[in-house]
Image 1 (cartoon, rainbow, N blue to C red):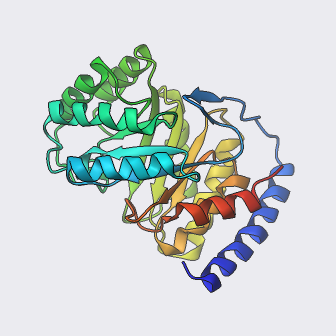
Image 2 (spheres, rainbow, N blue to C red):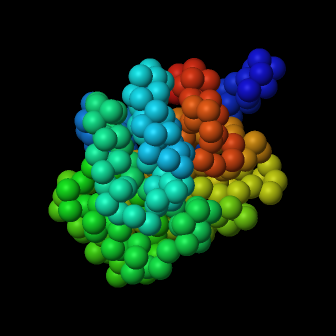
Length: 284
């Protein structure tokens, strides 16, 4: 992002954040007081925590990316995108690598994620194999947070969520739409359903087709933040939706994806710039 783009993004973020703060004061709020202390990171309280994905195809690449994230002061959390690996279907190799990544990251939490082809990922996988792989990971967890897609088989989601909690692993329940932005009421419905399903962190990512779509996502986030105490991780993707990754600080969001080098989804901002912008717009 060049200086002009950064300045423009910052100007819009500040203006938008101010309007969202004004809107927030007009609502009866539910204080977002659920805070998870995971390693040395408190998720659910300000400042917004940044997540940087590990997007490697090989073990060597993954280890190198983990070292960079571990030493980067603006990266708070790492996400292990298992589906991007050349050996994503081999649970034994994944677990061994996950353990190494966790050690390298030291005090920074690790999210384990199989992003399936159904939701924009690289791995085509049945519900049975999805459950089998996650159960294998959870025997001796190498992760502190586990991403579970809410629209997998309902029984599978429920069982994996319960098992993760038994293993003291927090669940990020997620939904991704890489084609469109659902209606605001539908976005809110999905996030609140994640809460009921036992999620610890509620996540949705949508693709905007217009400027109004970006506001739809942000308004939905603000409304849901009034109805749940759980941390929210929401975003409107692509360049059009990049502002949502910054203004999340003023609409009830607790986490935001940045990148170091290669993005895992369209619209991610370099994590150093993301942290700078978040620090400016976050409420005191």
